[in-house]
Image 1 (cartoon, helix red, strand yellow):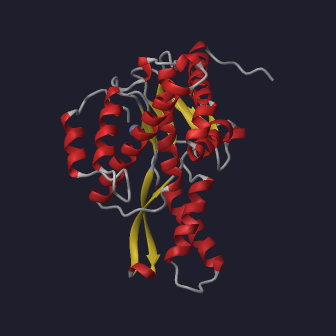
Image 2 (cartoon, rainbow, N blue to C red; image 1 turned 90 degrees about the horizontal axis):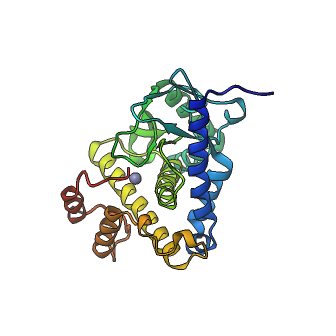
Length: 296
Ligand SMILES: [Zn+2]
């Protein structure tokens, strides 16, 4: 069957396919694989099993039938000044990995000896509540943003005997990536891809969290520090050791803000249990550089 796509849609797919191919090339590089085996496993699965590029029809992201699975992850290409509505149930629903994480969480807070069927029922109930309450998203990319991962989320009241009864927890649904449509297939953009893949992994693995502002803000900043660190360390490794000449001593790869912040973080947090803890000093340094070509 031949499907008709107008030239704008062809450009959207060509550009994002090129971005994903260049990100995949960096991830499959033996230097990346050897230096970051865990990240390699996760990124390879996301890029080569979960990711797809939705069509946009009348400003709304469409999910083709074959991607209406519990594992698919949309990578949206966004034109400048374009706002894409994300409302499809094939996107605004929990990812299979998130459900597994929720099941683990429920098992951890459930009373000892509670039957495992109860846990599955709780997971299904939470999923039903969050699916009903999640609102369509409006996706756009501000001019100074390199890319963005959206993770819709909402509060669900959960019975947590080990924590003293009913408490609200923030439950996330599947993340999706938004990439501005420009020339997006350079090695530099692959490093942005690696940064954003780190956010996808975070969204798939974090599990339910408290919903107070301090916890939410701290978590977002912590995740940003981790994404910068992955990006910087991947850049350093490929820059020095890759057989692929496009990375060799290529100054375009280096994102100055990411390098500065990661150096400060590393010095500050050398002996911390969580190396990505957003301490007061790190916060001050980030605030000083606010608006400095931030990759979110
Ligand atoms: Zn980020």
